[in-house]
Length: 433
Image (cartoon, rainbow, N blue to C red; front, side):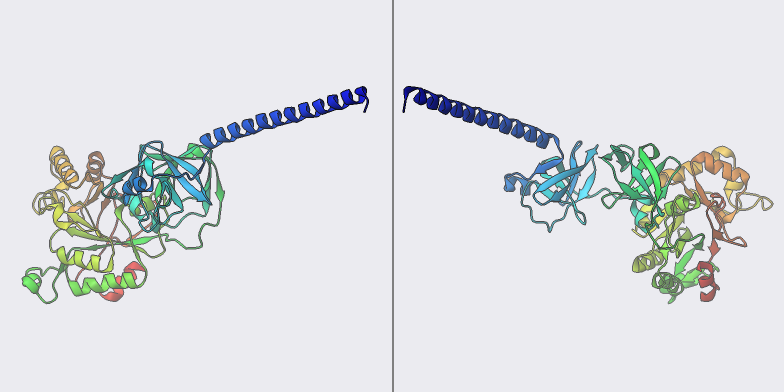
């Protein structure tokens, strides 16, 4: 080979080597760029790969009930990745799935596809007790309408704590003037109408709902066998036996009735919820002979409401998961407070300050209840105005010609079917049908 050919070969070789080195450098740069880009994306994205953690530390931090810290996430799992679907603002409580095997840094939420991160939770002794619609919302019939949320919509658990979600479409459970009640992670949440992109028709349910329901009024439930002399002592027509009351509640239970709460009824009257076709409200006045009432309600797991004369006994004497306690005045349920020409019950004729003080005391003793029952069923316009002034939102009377309660009912003149010891079973069935 001539010298020229050798030089050309060396030149070509050097060029190839140069190109190879350049290619390798470019590839390295691109690899570094790709790596940095994806690491940065992963650190900022909601797709978080499950990493090895100290499982002992994770397991030792486990509690059956937890409260998520401010800024924590709620995650779903897709193969080996956890994707954040919402961010917690404030603090929200969860019940964890104790049967889930902990294999990484996440705990599973009970009866849910959601997960929480072990270092974003604090253990608590028990979940905060729910009340009102938050406790009973799962009995409401969803509307065949859904809301489409805007990106970053806030789903409020209460006035301060909320989930922030990217988007989604959810059935409407409660319609309010400026917000909607939805279900998220097996709990009732509210979204402001300003966070709703649109409301769309959607076939969420084929279950029917009621357009009217009965409120039943009982008083005293006593022993049919005259145990402790109850039947001998209580001989008024409003004294019914435990056997009679048991047959009523058993009928409701066996026939699929829903015993609505006070809050349920208020929302229904305001046209904000749809209640099941078979719905009823059970109420009891005064506060005497309540033990057997509670026992039968608990036996059939049906909810009732006691309107308590506050001076008669303490609310703690009536504690039950199946009994609400609301106001029947503190001490205005006495004959003789008013002239016969005016009516019975001091709320009709006592001076304004005396009435307001009584109502205030009654409300405060019952956790600031807003539900009231008129003594002896008597009311007038002045009594209604004073109730409103005292902070009440609903008041119950006695029986009218048509005592079915419908949407739009005057909430300070709610009628009830009065049950007495001569009421027949057929009459009872007619009331609730």
